[in-house]
Every structure is written in C-alpha cells, then in structure tokens.
Amino acid sequence: MADRGRARTRRNGRADGGGSSRGRRPESARRTTTTEVRARTRLRRSLAAKRASGAAKVLGMSTTRRAAVVAIVVCALAFTIAVPLRTYLSQKSEVTEQQQLQSELQRSVTQLEGRKAELSDPAQIEAEARKRFGFVKPGETPYIVQLPEDKAPEQGQPQGQQPVPAGSWYEKLWDQVAGG
Image 1: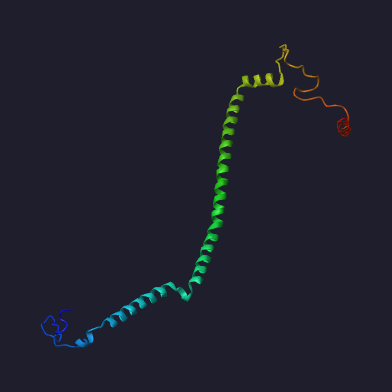
Image 2 (image 1 turned 180 degrees about the vertical axis):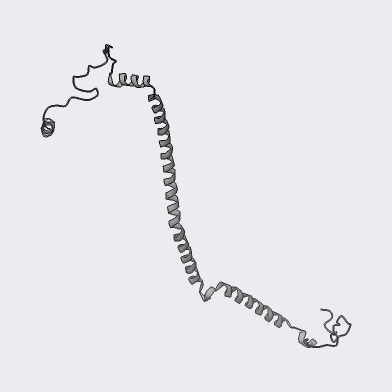
C-alpha cells in the first residue's frame, strides 16, 4: 500500500502495462474503496447463500414439505422392507424347527434300525415271545412264580386294568350323582 501515489510498473518496465491496453481498465478504475469492498463481500456472500438455498430448495419446496417427502420416502422404504423381512424371519424359525424335527426323526430311525437288527436274530425273537406272550415250546412245562408282593391277576382281565362294574352308563352316572 506504500506505492499508492505512484504508477505501478509491469514486467516489461512500462507503467502503462506494456503498450497494450486492450481489456484492461485504467488505473483510476482499479482503485477500490472500503465501501466497494464491503459491497463486493456482501454480494459474494449473498450469491453463496443463494447457491446454498438453491441446493436446499430441491424442486422449489419449502423445508416442511421436503421433510414430509423424506418421511414418506422413509416410511415407504420401511414398509417395502418389512414384509420380506417378516417372511424371512418366520421362514428362518420354521427351518430351525424342521431341522430339529429331522434330527429327532433321524435318532428314531437309528434306534429302530438297531431294534430291527436285534430282531433279525431268531434267539431274540424266541426270548421276546416267551417274555411278552408266555409262549412255551412243545414238551416244556411252564411255571409261574408268584411272589408275595405280586397280585394275582383276575381271570379274564389283563394286568393293569380295573374290572368293569355291571350296568349301563346312565345307571353308573346316576349312581355317582346320587351317591355323591
């Protein structure tokens, strides 16, 4: 700022700017005052603000309308994702249940295959028939050993069942209601 009063020299040493004054303003027009600087600064700021507000006002909508549009878009995305997500989670739980069922059935199959292998032996079949059905071979004498703790089975009644009282069902019901 010390050289305000004198003319500035250019690279070629001339004060007039090298002989060609095309496209250049005269020296007096270049000097700016503080009010001009402030005006330019305000202009720049207002242009920057207009650019920012122009970017903010997408499609010429106000802030409230933009917020509403954003909320609608977010809700639409949420509903679009919610149904497939719910289906995925329910199918995932069904798959785990089916896998558990499959593993249980596989264990059952292995147990039944083991039982089948046991019953392929004729000696095992004979032991099962003697134990469960009381079969004896011809010429053998069967003995039933009854211990004092065992109850004698009633004639014609399988073990574990109670004798059926005589009478029809409505007579039994009336006897229960009347007898208390």
